[in-house]
Image 1 (cartoon, helix red, strand yellow):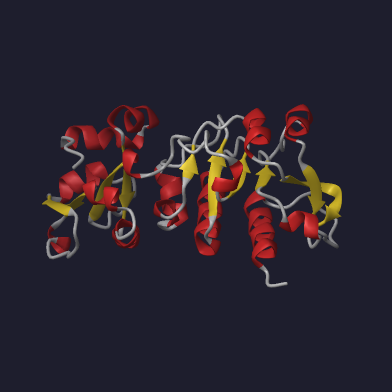
Image 2: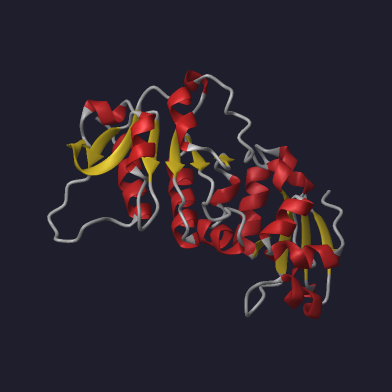
Length: 252
């Protein structure tokens, strides 16, 4: 169990307290349902605790439930209209600390590497895509938005409970973990090529700046292109991830 006092739970909207107390909040019926679904295969999530108002006091499920008044719920919530149900989830229940970094590449899932992604909506959408297709972990560089930020958690629609996340993964470590790394470039090879389908790790850069060329060169990444017919310079990073994963999962 998380065992936090409500005064401490109120602080979990700030990253430093999420790190200090080792917990984050997931608010709303849909997120709690996804949490309980994920707990079937990840029993560590059963250490989460629910805080509910009277309207949810009959909520069924395996999590410890605490009934609180609406005034306190408003203090725990970060939305204008609290739904009346919030889960306090232990970070330790999710694989997010880079514990797989020492494993050989062949033992790892395919990975998406995100370099300094700053927009919570983008990260949440990417996590939804990864959960949809499955079989792919998410590696975050230092400087990325905190995936346990309430906006990311909401945007993920519960996918955060179904995707293995590693934090603070430096670019130079990728070449030691993966032999086939792919990145996107306007002048790369076709996304439909056999070489793209061999990629073990796909690298995507910051929304405005991408990945610095000197860092990308260290990975030995092969460049690929999503063909387009428009006049704009780039795709939204979440859209690019969607297209790449669709291609990797497309039946030959």
